[in-house]
Every structure is written in structure tokens, then in C-alpha cells.
Length: 561
Image 1 (cartoon, rainbow, N blue to C red):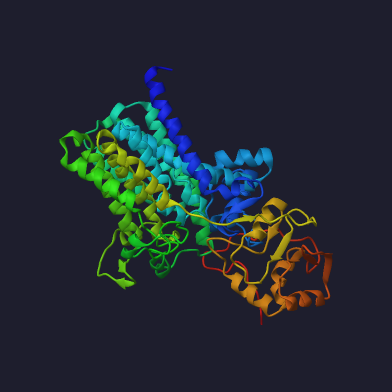
Image 2 (cartoon, rainbow, N blue to C red):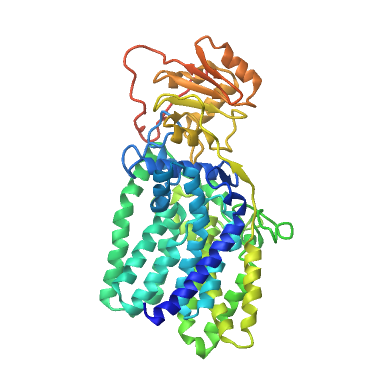
């Protein structure tokens, strides 16, 4: 190792250590219970744990992989929500060696933010030559206030592919080395496989980057970058086609008014997530419409852009500052959705960037335009890194970096509970059995316990907690509420149905289950009551899964008349 390489490596190791320490403190409540507990609740975190476990058990994109074991007996249920394949290289080996998906999820959560910071550190240091600027830029992206709003959405925390791809692009245009093009390709595939929002929004930012920085590049580099983008598209195409075919079969799409309701208003720039430790109670809060960037980041970003534009000494930063400022503004405009609003009052606007985006195929499959702010956060973090690099270069101003870094961490600080993951049933059901697992109430949609237990227990559940719900779910719930045996008929026509009644379930409903003449009680304990309703009919059973329906047709009908 040369002295120059060693001098570049030590700041990165120190930055990585710093980011790990901050992440460990944020998730400190889960550190001692990594194999058994989750941060937040048993909704999205447990859903994503289930997905990670399912991925580790099946070859991605295989026919079995597409049939996630929720909403039985439907097929293609994997396409109802995120796939989390971007986490596959980290989480699947952990699950293979330990058999513990909760541990794999927690490892991903603890490492995602430091990786975000480290990739942004490399990007900003490449742009400024300053390791202090890189450290602050990484801190600003990894621990921005927006991170707290999505602490329970692991797919939103896996954002390191974007700064890695931009780092590779900047270096490739500057040096022309193939290894930098490879870094761009790795970052791009990571970003497009992390979640649906970066899949849609990050290519827009990359296109903007090409307009800013490739105008004077030679044809060879244009062709090489285009080839890398094309290779990424070919890799992702089978996944996108699989989602499209299955979502079209079930008629799954986001309603326009639903998209508008999940868009951010202009005032969201002053709204913080409820988990914010510093500003909650002082500023208005919201879960998805919280785009508060943080005063420290705004101050540093303003300084970085201002210095780049007016100082001859930082002339080489000018195009960089203009690109990331433009990128932040564009992503904020997309976060506003198809209709611009100010405190729920429409602002006259015939066309918006998002309304134009909705003209593209597949754009109606994402529901929350405000999540484009994740990319704006990255752009602002780079601008903040420019500001920190300038401060670090001024003898009488460098002392400001430390208090601004402390304020940045304080503004992004958040908290939350730690909850135990559910334990498997003490009774074994046959592989691929159909199970209806009922929690405290029949309409309890806030927890993903049943499908998590189904994945680790190798059976399928009638329940589901997902981004989409099939059409028959409401009829099923109503039939159960009405104590109508017709609720079980479509499922019993295909297989035995195991019904799990958890403690706290409505006693009248449990009494009704006890009264069913053909319900075999298999277990009655403090953990649960388990019943078996035998298959209706004779002869060989039909296939365990229904085929994909024709577009627009109901996949399953529950006759409650």
C-alpha cells in the first residue's frame, strides 16, 4: 500500500466508525436482542423480515419465489409489495447460516445507514478533495431528519447504491477507468433493486447528471455509460415484467386520488417526522409528508452553493453545485405529486413534473410521490459537504464544522420501541397447509405476524399484510365478523383449513368456532386455540394455488348471501 493510498484509507475508516457509532446509538434498544426483537412495530418491519426469509428460501424470479405464502390460495403474491432483492447479498447468507431472519433484518438495519454515509463520503471527497467535507456529506445523507420518517421502512434506508453510482460516474468521466464504470453499474443495480421509488426516480437523476457532465465527453465514454445503463435494464427487465404481468392480472394499480393524497404539500418543508427527538412538538409532524431538511443541512448547503457560485477559488465546484441544487429542486417538485398544494389548497398548475411522469407505463404502481425527497436529501447532503469542505479550508472558520455536525446529528435523532418477533406455533401443520391466523381482532390489519409465521413454518396463510390487498379480503372479513360459515367455503373446497385463534380474540367469535360441528380442535393452550376444518368434497385435491386470473376478473369469490 502506498503512502497516498494509506492517507486516503484512514479517513474513510474513521468515517465508517463514526457512522457505525451513530447508527448503533440510534438503534441501541435492539442491540442486545438482535436475534429476537425488531425496532418499531410488527407491521412493516415484520413484513420485510418475512420477505427476506422468503428470498433466502427461494431462487429469485423462479416460479416458487413469485408465490409468497400470503392471501392463500392466490398465486403471484410476491408482486403485491416490495421484493428487497437489493438486500439479498447481505441478508440471505445470514439466514442460510443462522436460520434467523430477524437477525438478518437487524443486521441490514444497522448497516444500511453507515453504508449510505460511507458511499456519500466517497462521493463528496471525490468532488472536493476534503475528507471533512466527505464526512459531513455522509453524515447529512445517512442521518438526515428524513431518515427518521422511514426508520420502519428498510427499503427506504437501503440508499447507498445512489451515491455509489454517482461516485462511479464522476470518476469515470474524470479518469476513464473501467473500475469506475463498474462501480457505477454496481451502484445502479443496487439502487434499482432497493425499492420501487429509487427504481423510478433515480434514473431521472442520472439522466440529469448526463446532461450536466457528459456534454463535452468523448463518444467512447458515452457509449460505455450507455452500455452500463443498458446492462442494468436487461438485468431488471425480468423482474419488472413479472411484476407487470401479475399486477395486471389482479387489476392492481394506484388510484389517481390516492397518489395525490400521498403527495407532499409545499408546507411539508417545515414538517418533521413524529419520531424526531429535537423538533417534534416544536414543528408540525407527519409520517409521509415530512420533508424538513434540517437547519444544519440547509445552512451548509447554502454556504456550499453560494461559495461555489461566487468564489474563484472554488470555480471547479460550480457545475457540481448547480447539478446537485437542480437535482434537489427537481426531486422536491416530484415529491409534490401531480397536483401542487399548500395546506391542502390547490395551487394553480396545469402541468407538474409528476403529472408528466404519470404518462409513463408503470408509474401508477407507486403510491407515495413524497418519497422522491430521499433523492433530494442526497443532493442536499452533497451541497452540505461542499459547504463543510469550504469551512474546513478556512483557518478561522473550521471550528464551525464540529457544532454544525452535532446539530446535524441532533436534528436527525429519532427513537422508537423494540418489540419481540412472534414465536412459531407449538403445533406443526403440514407443509403448504392453509392457515387462517386470527390476532386480537378479525380486522387487525396493523401486524404481519401470520405471514411471517407462515414463511418460517412452511405453510400458507389466508391472511395478508401487504402493499395491495385482493378484492375478496373485505368480504372475507365481513363474513367472519358475521360468524358466517361461508367465509371458509372457497378455501375448504381446495384443502383442509387450520384456524388459529389467538388470546384476546373476541370471545363470541371463539364460541362460534367451538360450535362448528366439523371443526376439529387440535390444541387449546394459553398460546392459541387451533382448529382444523376438513376439505369439502371427495377425490384428489386441486392444485394448492389458483392460476393468475384474467385481467379484471375476481381471483376468489366469497358468497355471503
